[in-house]
Length: 139
Image (cartoon, rainbow, N blue to C red):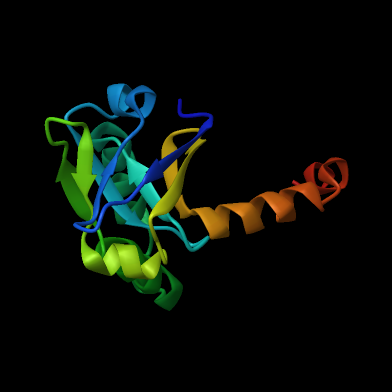
């Protein structure tokens, strides 16, 4: 399970060090794709296999399902770690998530989210400004 938040820097070549705590749980590689919240999702291969099976089980005759599959799969990359524990993010993912030098990794149960610092600050404000007790009653 992934939890916590860690600030790391993205270098000019698109490399970013994954927090050691997260890297240990990811294993040999990271499966990275875009997330509906405007950040990036990072999965272990084992967790991605489960997500992939879930996507396969959906009815692909439905337009929404096809769009979701295209959304996830067209920008999905399996990335290895270098000797310094970094992944090299493709330029299209950097652009999609609007990542700049300062980035924030956040744990989200079975996935990691990678945010631009600005986007994470906005998300934290959103969290701080919501009545969480009321929100969870509707779940």
